[in-house]
Image 1 (spheres, helix red, strand yellow):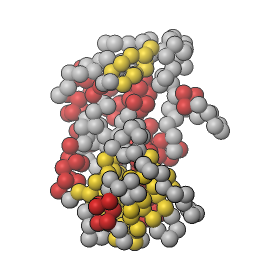
Image 2: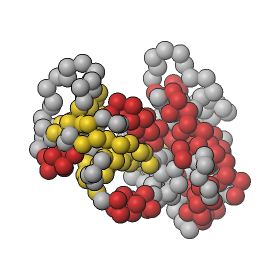
Image 3: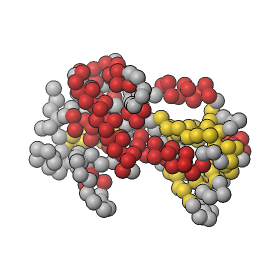
Image 4: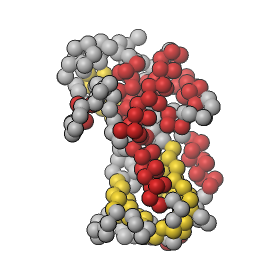
Length: 265
């Protein structure tokens, strides 16, 4: 599933390509035919990201809400696009650009009140930390109410928005917190460090277009695990202490950590 940095990059790219223009919309698959008809030919005003959600605001039309989920993908074409696949849920096109969307978990038109409700149930977004008051305090308050392991808590989008499986493993490693530590027992200093590290890593992901947590990512093409400390590196030596990386299951997802660098308090 794309993590928060990817969603922000999609928002910025689609804003650049489509905003301010009248956009042709269609649903080759047919599952979004009614919605596509509602926005077809409308001017796109702006595109907004919040956590793993995308919101497209149109002139005189409802908001297009997209959540890619595990299988959703965008494809962008600057030249004549190929025929859409049978699974293409939505096509957005101008004279210069065409975007295909296939496999999203959510693709719907919603009223402003529903948009606000969706945002209200999401936790603070590290990529909206600048200029937004009390984001770190909200994050801390959300953790205080949960006895579940911190590794499970930060995958809950109502606790913190935009964190996925890679970022949770890497951020917890980098601040030295064991993923099995109960969320409400994580110290104030650790909560602040986790929030700040989440901001740092997601902002780096937006800049680089990939998740890299090592101080210097390998040049050129590389395997994903070559850019990370613990994710999918079970049985390999820890890059920091040389111990063996562990793997477990948490919140229905695999998780990795170093027992030496992340001792259970």
